[in-house]
Length: 181
Image 1 (spheres, helix red, strand yellow):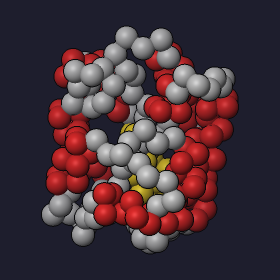
Image 2: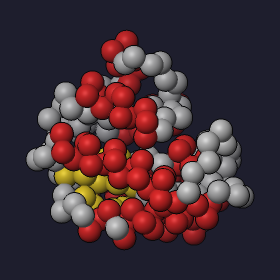
Image 3: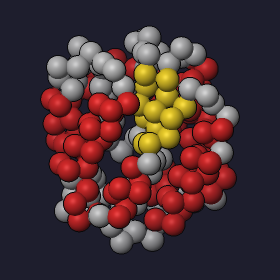
């Protein structure tokens, strides 16, 4: 059963806004045995705060995470590659430790259109792929950046930031090939 994040907001300490495109993603998983949630603009620190209420309550076999873009692109903070990696790895470790029977699937950090922080996104993603992937046997890295970055006109919406419908379709197709619902 799919539960729309809008219905969950009352149980979250912080109010988040959702993107219409994320709502469409919920519809795409409506007939699947899964629980989908998305918090627009969220960073790893936000998921550390809400994970007990949103992730740990579900006893999931598979957890799919797409996090890091907003951390890197938040202009109010500046970290080096290792600091961004540490924050994401800490979240992945926490979720993995609290859900020891769950497989963790991680979509890499796609570039934004003409963004000066794209190189940082690429370096952090490479570190997650190359280093974190070796430390956790239940972790699967999904190389969405190679698809999105190679054809941004197709996979990134006209705002230059969010996935286009084709981008969301890529996520869905990839997950359908990896996970049995």
